[in-house]
Length: 248
Image (cartoon, rainbow, N blue to C red; front, side, top):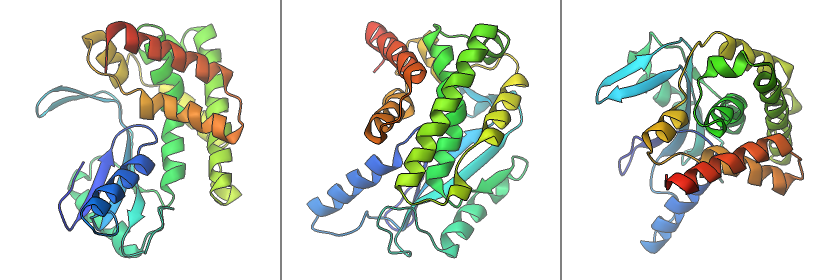
């Protein structure tokens, strides 16, 4: 997260986090007798680059991918938390990431879509990895039963995503479809023995990202009336791991 009193805030994390973050910031401003969220803009970032932090300043980057970022809130756009933005918001984040030129960086005009796009990978592959006690991605894609399960979770995630975007008046042209499913399967087929970060947390008995990465998606599906039995079962397994090992 990048922040100061006048500039932007960027959340580079997994899951559906921005709505709660902005609401929390608004409440903090209200306690001070102020309006707004207390910053110029809030961005959300998604990384699909297969990197694990080994130690401060040292990472293992095993597969090329891309960084994606969108706007969750913009003071200049007089935003009502619907993700509106102005051109200066886009240029500011492009300028910030210009030094990271070797890694492709893409501005996502619709952050809600961007979060769901990343969830199409996170929910099946991080989810199955942790649900199975912590296995690498290659073991998921090369096992016929787990591969089939991944396909089912992808389809459920896309159904939730499109219902959520439809509720928020997104264009059907922005909906996710077969191309997203194929993209995530192709990426996963080529990742090799990648360790999702939640899997590493489980093995190291460190706090896991569960609420915003996993549970929020199921809760959103319930609110929208979208059935996701395979995803919900996986999330229940993950929450059990979290409780049994006290990974909060």
